[in-house]
Length: 358
Image (cartoon, rainbow, N blue to C red):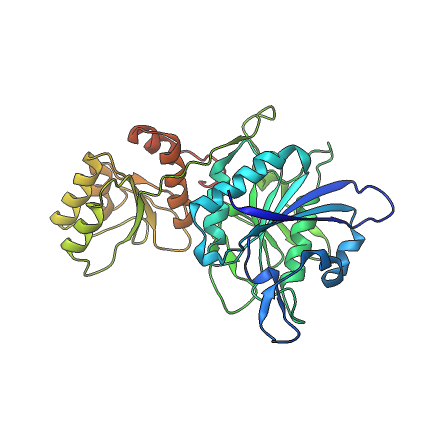
C-alpha cells in the first residue's frame, strides 16, 4: 500500500463539527500551487486549505486529508492505486460520513468506474473531483469543484442517512455517476459528461438533487464488501476501416488474455469479413469474454438488430449495452479478479452492479 501523510482540519473552531469527511489527495492539477520564487507548480500544502478556500469555514465539517506519498499524475494511475484507495476507504469507512478523492482528470473516469465495482454495498458518498487549473492560481475551477464536492459528500436524507451512496464525479456544477462518465474536453471547465444517464445533482444557487436517479444498494442491511483484486489481462480493441487480419489476430493471441472490450460502430456493428468473425470466435471458444460497446459517446449497443452485428451474437460476443469503455474495461478487470469462470464473468457483465447499465 502507498504511504500517506495525514492533515487534520476542523472548519469549526468552537465545537465539534457535525460531519466528518476524509479527503484522499492522489495528485493532479487541483492540488497544485504556484511557487513564489520559481513560479513553477508544486504540490499544495493542505494545512493551508482554509487560507486558499476560506468558504470552507462556513461549513460544519471535520476534515482529514490523506495525501498519498508519492503523489501520482493521473496518467500514471494503475489498478494497484485503485486497490490502495479501496483499502483506505474500507479501513476508514466507520470513521467518516463521506469521502472526497482529489484526482487528475485524465483517468478520473477510469478510477471512478473501478471504485464503483470494488466497493459493493456502499452506503456513503465517494466523490471524485479535480480541476482544469490549479487551486493556487487566481482564475481556477478548483475551488468551486472542491466546495461542491464537499457539500455533496455531506448531504443527508431526511432520515439522517447519507443522501449520495455511490461513487460519483463532481465537476463543473454537476454530480455525475462515476461509471457513466467520460472526459470529453481539455480546453474548458466542462471536462466531463454522462451521455447515457442524467446528472444526479446540479449546483446552482442551491444544490438540486434528483433523488429518483440516485443509486441504492439492493438491501439497506447490506454491509460494505471491498474487492481489491483486479485482473489486468484485458484489452480494448477499436474496430476501424482497414483493420488488418494480422493486427487483430496478434491482439487476440496475447498470452493469458481474459477479456476484450470491442469498440464497434454505431449500435454495435462490425465488418462481416470471415477472418474477423473467425478470429473473434476463436477467442470466445478459448474462454475470452468479449464485450461489445459502441464507439459513439451516447447511445446503446443493440446487438443483433442489423446483420452487421448478428454474427457477433451468434459467436458468443456479449452486448455491453450502454456501458462506457471506461466502465466496461474496469468492470472486466474487477470481475476477473473476483471470478475464475468465463460464464460467471459473462453473466455479471450483463447485470447492472452499480448503476452502470440502463
